[in-house]
Image 1 (tube, rainbow, N blue to C red):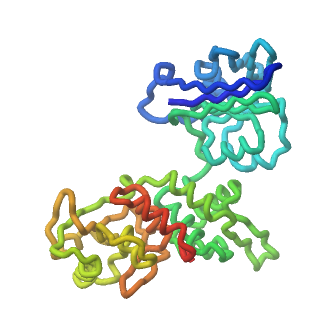
Image 2: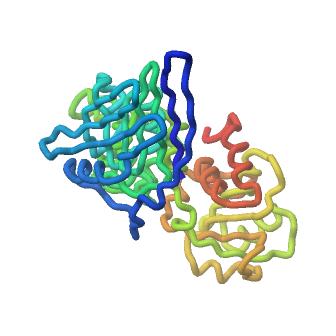
Image 3: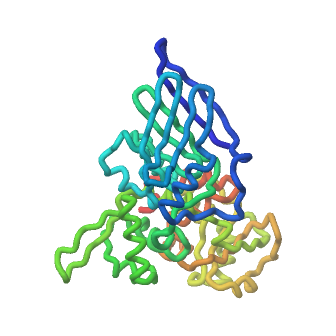
Length: 371
């Protein structure tokens, strides 16, 4: 489902219409998202079917005569808009720093919504292959949002939010006011220097992180988190709880969270576990009584040691095997219990029920969050 919003000036006031369109019949369903790797491929897909549309008061059409002069044509009885296409394979916040050109429309395989929101605020015309299209002038606004992601941008390096690379994101968020070198980040996270360099370059391009230039051969460049909230939100959008965890539920004959947690500590020790979700947030910032006690466990064989009955659903104890052990980094302690860091607690609460998102929002709004 996709929304189209149109404002257009007329002689006797302002014309406004909102129309809703379902694109399912016009999109070829793919088994997986298609990656666009060249500008020519981008432009060829652009002109196929998604933008050549006849609406009640105007029409839109992209043309690509294969001479490099692709253009967007918007026509209504009152006027014609003609914008030259600027293909961009790797959209980033650098686009916001470019000199605006009202005669051009940026076209990318895919534009993430946070960047698209900033482009809209800056009044920069843009479109992507997933159906996004924005053109705004003083008396004309065309704003169409994508309903689903069918195309993606080519990879320019490791995904910063993949399990291992996200160790860097976690380290930066957990040390929001600390300048760090590449060597320090590699040592803290166990990620190779090559991956550290590539991920940091992407984070700097997106204005998540600021880089201070090296002042000499013996004084390396440092990196400082520039936008905590925006980086955390980007990670939230990319996070996949189902993929990065395996949850094993148990039933414990107790309704007291501290008692359940103490049984886990007594059985497994403090070095092999780290509590997360409701119980961890409750220890850090009491809000509501935790419905479940959950903890990451370093080794799978420890699941056989816990003195509790394994159940398929409804357990009051969750033991979680993580895909990547980076979840343990940035850990902390509260009332004698080992916890993951605040950022990890927040991310782990969002995709689960039992008021998990509500608890996450309350926790994030706390003045002591991640400090």
